[in-house]
Image (cartoon, rainbow, N blue to C red; front, side, top):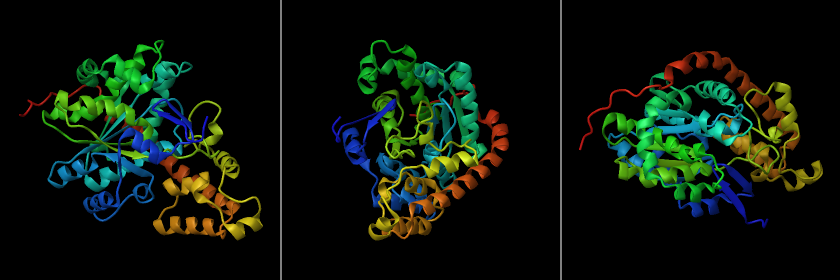
Length: 385
């Protein structure tokens, strides 16, 4: 494979991804400083580190949603998780931004747990396993601190009664040729995954369906998930719903420095899982790929390259608690003042502190989980013209 070739779909990421080229291929827009400043103003003068550090870099229709919100028409946020194993730190990227948006803008949050999709996609997983991981993953997500009064969960195999009316309408609008072209499904693909895009569309339309009027939606997600929602956007207006806006994040590197983090397969050492014990965190990070030089002397003289370092990527996405700390880590890495061993030791301490605090929040989150799962739809409002 040539260096410039890569493949990105919701089901496969292969090759060295050029995110700017991928954005252009997908036809999305750059997340500009001007748009970030508008969001900063609506959020009371603050921006989340995921925005200031460029982890989110692309969008669809964010300007329209900000215009509407400023005029008193709030949007809601929606993101999802396909449960096939424990969560790792990269899985938290869309949910941490959603939680921040919920807090700063006072908006509703919809989470979709797609235990059906993972059962259809992973041949080795049973329905019992995807359901169990769905509950565990949901517990971890709620432990991030979502407002229970403004958080709603579609757990697909339990929420189908709330979802099916919309899914039926959506499915009629999506020809098989579209699904095959977008996702590259072979003729042997089971029909569950063919139908799944109709189900993943439901949360984007559900608040409008319930309210009987257009309610805008913003979906923070990895850019690899964009194909699902291009299909959603294509059919939205024909069904009387507003097109959802999207905020795309880059795909953060795993600890090996090349592949993205993964839950399954032979790449578990490539990820920091939320249930990793402290010794496992330390082991993984000590062997993590860095942008350092071959010797201490050379690194002191030439400096390291943070942009290719899997350890720096963790500081960037979550573990540097302030912009000042992140800028110091980056500058000291680049100058050679901060050596990779010291940087890793600092990160091990920070990660284990985060995981311990997160674990302490899980019991309360597990109790909350049952109360936020939607199993039936409320009475639908009379549509307004």
